Image (cartoon, rainbow, N blue to C red):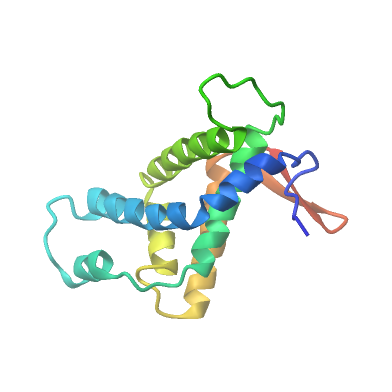
Length: 167
C-alpha cells in the first residue's frame, strides 16, 4: 500500500520516478555529505582520525538514509504536486522528465541542507559515524525535525494519517 503524506499526494508517476532513482541518489547523498563535512569542518583536508574515517567509510547502514530520502521525496511532491502532464516535444517520456527534474531538485536540496551544521552532524551520526542504534535513532529524529523546519513544513497527525502543512 502506498503511504500518502498529504491528502493530494496522488502524483504516482512522480513517485515512481523517485523510487527508480532511490539507490543512485542515496549514494549521491553520502558523497555530498562528505563534501559538506569537508567544507564545514576541514577545508584544508588535514588527515585526522575522524576525517579519514568519514572519507574511507563505504560500509554504513542505509535504512535510516532511505527514510530521510523518502522524506525529501515527500517534500518535493508536496511543493511540486501538480499531476497535470505537459506536452513533451524532445522525445522523452514523462517518467524520464520527472526523473531528471527530481534528480536536479534533490541535489539542490542536499547541497543547501549541507550548508547547515545540524544536518551534517545528524547525517554523519546515522551513517558514516554510526556507533549505536540509539544514537542513530536520535539523530534520525533530529534530522527529520530539521528538514521540516528548513522547508517550513509541519507534520500533523490526525485520524491516523500524517499530513504535511506549510507552517
